Image 1: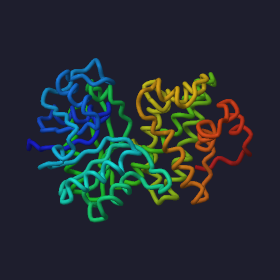
Image 2: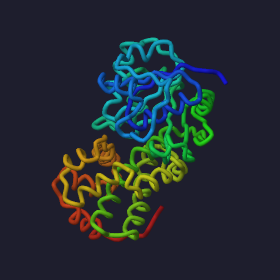
Image 3: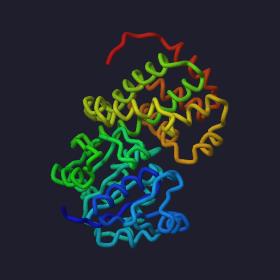
Image 4: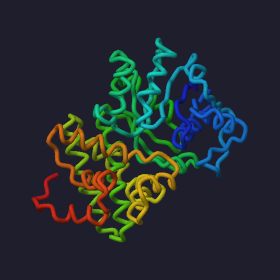
Length: 336
């Protein structure tokens, strides 16, 4: 097997787990960490704050020097927050204007105001000529289970089949199965939108509404995701796959999901800031909720669950009143 040098952007739990997997396969992995103190801690203690039961691979290297991470690499992998994607890649462009390698995106979200998917953000920063080098990795995958080598299956999507195949082989592991897909925008859309529905499901469980309500929210939530994805010219079949329905099922039904927990805590009476603080990690659904509604309004698409989540997060509406808003909507024939 050929050994590659990989630059990795982001040292959150998910990013570190993927970087650790690549190091297990023998690759040289340099991980950029915004926090210099955390980078030093990870190098010396080999323990991540959110993965305390796992010792990181000895060959993983962490640094807060982005230029060092970008130097002489064969692949660049991204795992920063969705809101951090643009400023980080602006730095990448400045430090490595002639970057010539496949770029793998793994964050899930939609940029506010522009309505750009993260791949569109990267292309907006780096230039359209980078399109064929872009791929996207997404699917039902909790960091803790991946790093413990529990069987996990995701999708790798890209514009160029050859680059997609290279990235698929890069990450393929005995417990990490990867299917290729060429509807990259559909794959990314499913991964971003499911976080909003997970907040709704968490809130429903927090209110004690039970399994019936959660199943309904997941099903109608999938319908919302599909409607908006089709309006954005994605394939409906993609939303039924691993990066859509698969990721939705995982994120909406587990207390290990930060978006689910966020909704649950808010239904228990926590403020948005209190819930975020208790979770201690970025809650992407709270950010994406705004972006999705902005897109929906422009395209004339109705997203009642997303609208209800937005009312709770940003309009001061109580979770119970948001449920009443959903129940009082006119009943129409189910159309999928």
